[in-house]
Every structure is written in structure tokens, then in C-alpha cells.
Length: 73
Image (cartoon, rainbow, N blue to C red; front, side, top):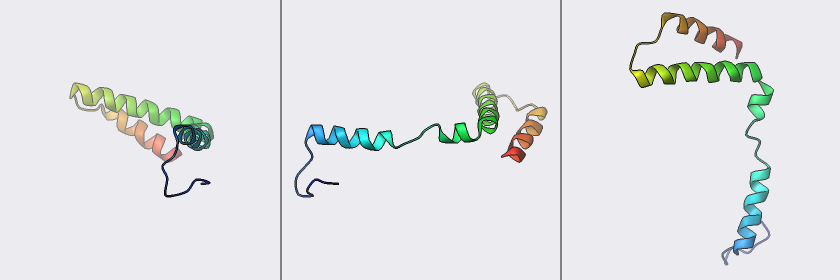
């Protein structure tokens, strides 16, 4: 960075650094690269979350779906 190490950043400088670094992050890169796998994993995670909250055992068919999704990754 262009600032000196011995002085703290001004608020405007800190905001500018934050904006620059946040513009470089691509949060949806993996979703755009692997859309089918992303949807499958989100579906599977939703099913598991729902069952975990109810404290009911997972259905046996869910294991087969999970294995198919993992194979496609």
C-alpha cells in the first residue's frame, strides 16, 4: 500500500482500501462455474438442515441422492 506504516489510516483512506479489496472478490464465481453442482449441494444442504432441526432421521433415499451429487462434483 502507499501509506506509511507509522501512521494510522484516515477514514477516507480506509474506506478506499476496503472498496478496492471488496471489488476484487467474486463471491459467485464457483456458482457460475458449477451451476448444477451448486444447486444440488444447496438442495441437499436444505434437506439436511430441515431434518436436523426436526431431529428426525434422514430418509434412506437421501443417501442415494447425496452420492449422485457427490459423483458429479
